[in-house]
Amino acid sequence: QVHLVESGGGLVQAGGSLRLSCRFQRLITSTFNPATMAWYRQVPGKQRELVATITGDRVTNYAESVKGRFTISRDNARKSVYLQMNNLKPEDTGVYYCNRQHQELPWGQGTQVTVSS
Image (cartoon, rainbow, N blue to C red):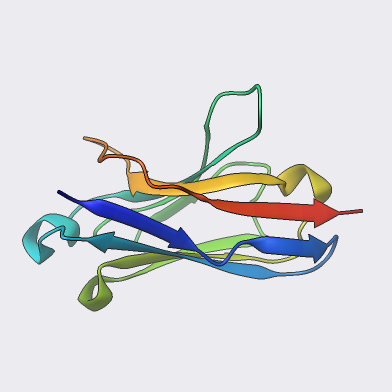
């Protein structure tokens, strides 16, 4: 079974940076490479929110709230997706998850990001 492993979260002051990583364990390369991958975040009591996507051709798209601050990237050889988050704001606080945007895989544990003001 495919296993998603997110890491890189933590506690940071407003204006700081974090880099999240996500490994798609046991997803075969021919399936990973062309797929659009995504980062989401969830705050308690709210629905999971789409933050950023990257296609197999490395076309990226971002939620308005993170444009210019976050950068999504991927490493097909490592079957991994990354999210570089700069100039973090308290409203970026939440649990961040990765997944394939279409035909979702079983969700991982996520990684907690907390931004203090």
